[in-house]
Image (tube, rainbow, N blue to C red; front, side, top):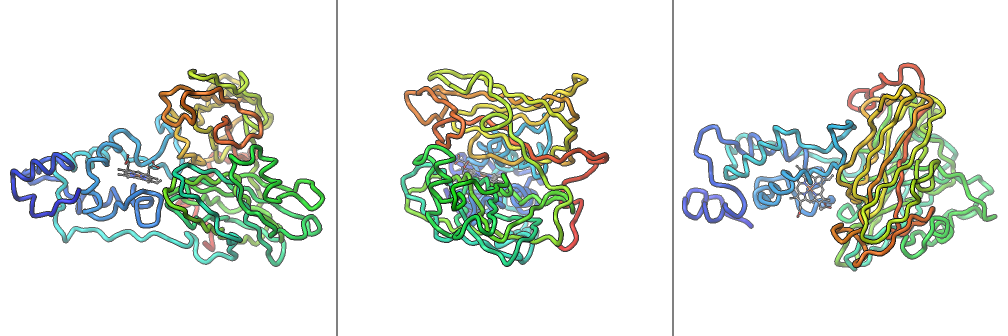
Length: 463
Ligand code: HEC
C-alpha cells in the first residue's frame, strides 16, 4: 500500500496506516532513517535482483519502493528467505554469499518497526548503477540465439534443453563465458555445457529445432537427439560440462590467470542443458546471448569436473526410489584417488529435495565440511565457489546426504496425492528426481590452498 508522507504527522492516522506496513514512528533523535542507514543495505543486498527487468518481482531501490513493501520485507528477512542463500554459513563459506549480516538485518527490522522514517534528503545516496550488457567490457564475440525461446503463459515452471550454435573464425581459447538472459524476469537458472565439433563432424550446426521441453522428451539422450546435437554420423561430439551457468543476481565466476578457461572450437554449440523458467501468466519469449572473452593461450590448469550420484561416479544408497507419503534419506560416497583442489560445488535435486549435506572424511578421520543446505529450494541452485581452493587429500571419502520429502507437506510436491517417484539415471523430467553433487576441481599443486579465488583480490590484467 502507498501512503503519502505528510500522513506521518497525523498521529491517529499514522497508527492505523502503519500497523499495516511500518511500525509507529520513533520520536527519539537517534532514529534510523532510510537515507542514512537503510538505503545502503538495500542497494548492496537487494537491488541487484529487485530492479526493472531483473528477477525480483518488484523494484527495491527508492524509499517508496521499500516502504510500500515494508511488511513483506520484515517477514521474509526475519525468516531468512531473502536475500536467497540456502547454504548454512555456519558450516562453510563461499564467495558472493547473499546474506544480510546480523547487524544490518536488525537495523532493517528496527527501521520498519519504528515507522520507516525517510530522513534527511541531503543524505540520500546515489542510485547504484548496474551493468546491463556485460560485466567485463566489450566482448570479443557474442553468440545469439537463432530464434527466440517461447515460454507459454500457462503458469507453470518450465525446464528446457536449448542449443545456441555458433561459428567463429578459428579454434581459440576463452577465459570468460558470460550468459546474459534476454528475459531476466523469467530466467531462473541455467547450467550450460560447451559442445565442440570437428570440422568434418557436423556440416550444419545451425539446423533446428533449438529447444525442447524436458518434460516432453524424457531422457537426456532423447533431448540431445531432438535438438540435433549429435554428429552427422550419429556419434556424440565432445562435451565440456558446466562451462557456464546463470542464476539471478550471481556474478560470472572469473578465475586467477592460468586457472580455468577453455579451448573453443571454430564450430560448436553452447548447450543450455538445464534452463529453468519461472511461471508466466502470458505468452512470452527469451532471447539470451553469450559473451565470449578470448584468452591469448590455452589454460595452464583447466578445471575438471566430477559428479557423485545420478549419472555420476558413485551409486546412491539405497537406490533413488521415494515411496509416496515418506521422507527419505539417501547417501552417495566416492573415494578420491589423488590430492585435489576443489574450486566450486553444485548440489542438485529436484522438487522433492528437503535438505542436502556434503563433506569429506580424510584418511586420518578428520572431516572437511563442504556444504549444508538445511532447507532445499529448487529455485536457488547456486554453483558455490570456495573463497580459497579447498584441498581434499588422496584417500578421502566425499559423502553427500540428501533428504527427499514425498509427502503433502512439501508445497513443491508435483503430485497430490503423492506418487512413487524414481530417479532413473538420465531422466530429465522434473517430476522425476535427481541427487547429485557436482565438483569442479584441479589436481592439487603445493600452495593451492593459499590461492584466493575472489576476483576483487586477484585482479586479472586486461579485464
Ligand atoms: C538473487 C536475487 C535476489 C536478491 C539478492 C534478493 N531477492 Fe528478493 N526476490 C527475488 C526473487 C526472484 C523473488 C520472487 C520469489 C522467489 O522466486 O523466491 C523475490 C521475492 C521477494 C519478496 C516477496 C516475497 C513474497 O513472499 O511475496 C520480498 C519482500 C523480497 N524478495 C525482498 C528482498 C529483500 C529485502 C532483499 C535484500 C535484503 C532481497 N529480496 C534480495 C530475488 C532476490
